[in-house]
Amino acid sequence: MESVPTPSQLAYTEDVANLSQPVREFDGRALPAAMAALPWGHNTELLFKVKDPAKRLGYAHAALEYGWSRAVLMHQIESDLHGRQGRAVTNFERALPPPQSDLARDALKDPYNFDFLTLSREARERDREESLLAYIRKFLLERGAGFAFVGCPDWPR
Image (tube, rainbow, N blue to C red; front, side, top):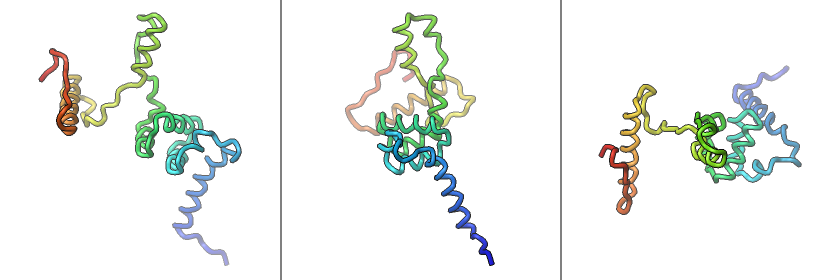
C-alpha cells in the first residue's frame, strides 16, 4: 500500500525543487566568484527571490562591491534596484560635451526613491520638499550636538 505524503512533506519537496533548480545552473567547479564570496544567507535570498540568473549575478556583484548586509540586499531586491538602474530621463547628451555628459549622467544614474517619506502618489513637489526637510531635521537632531543643516536662503525655515 502506497503512503500519501503529508502537507509538510509536500512543502519540503517543493522547496527542494525550487532551490535545486537555480543550483543546477552551476556545475560546482565554475561557481561565479561573486556568489562563492557571499555568505550563505545572501545566496539563499538570491536563489529564492531572484529567478533570472543574470539579475541574480548582478545583485551578487553589487552586494560584494558595496558591502551590503543581507537586509540591504533584500531591500534592493524588493525595490527592484536592477529594474530601476539607469532610468533617469535627462538631456545631458544633447546639452553637454561627452566627458561632462557622462559625469552628469553617472551622478544621476537612478531615480530617487523617497518611499521612506510615506507620501501619497498625489503629493506635490512642495509637500515632498517639506517632508524631506523635516526628515533631515529629525535625523540630525537624533545625532546630537555637532551637526548642522545649512540650506539655501530661498528654502523654508
